[in-house]
Image 1 (cartoon, rainbow, N blue to C red):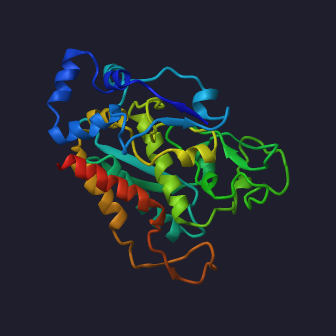
Image 2: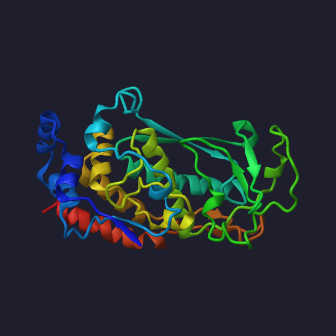
Length: 317
């Protein structure tokens, strides 16, 4: 295992900048916010740690990129920022996220609520689901794994990828027959296998969705500290990424959206604690006719909630 460590001076410059205007902007932050963000360059911080690399296939090794500090982010004239008339994030489901429309709608409500907390202060709206064919995305059947893959750009994430056994030889979503399909024939997606809704699946979905939306706001892959915005080449690496941002990327997002860190942390805790609806729902383990209750599965978020609580303690000292 290799650890990517930066000096205190390097991290401090990446966070605060040497630009007098940006330094002044930082000094105008709430003392509690400065205290939390300063954890970025505290060598003994127990809230933020260095990036660890476990294999040559990890993103940073296989995809060399120039790091983006706060000053470079702030100076990017092409990055997207909310404005008075543009304060909404739209989420549109491609296909279903469950074996019925009702479970798909419930799952999307969870993701909507999570995004509203993560990008605190912005409105999140759900658009009507569309079939894969409506996207006109190209697709392929992987010759090695026989998994179905959509060629998609920024802002789209794969639900199926985050099933526990996606990369195993026993994955149920493998295409049974290797037929060559034309670019306009989407019939292979009919009745496509969807993984069971679980806490791990919801965690991975929340993590990937907010990572991709972070790119839309101009945050590039993080190379400073362990962070949600790290790139990932495979599921094991994606699972190692934390669910939240390092201080450098958090300052970028705060600058773009304009939330107070304390309000955002409290909103994230509320999302974890909020009860799911009591409306009967269907899970993939049951038949389409059998109705069961589907509570929001947040067991996998337990450690993250504890981490947010510690961040709140720093903010409220």
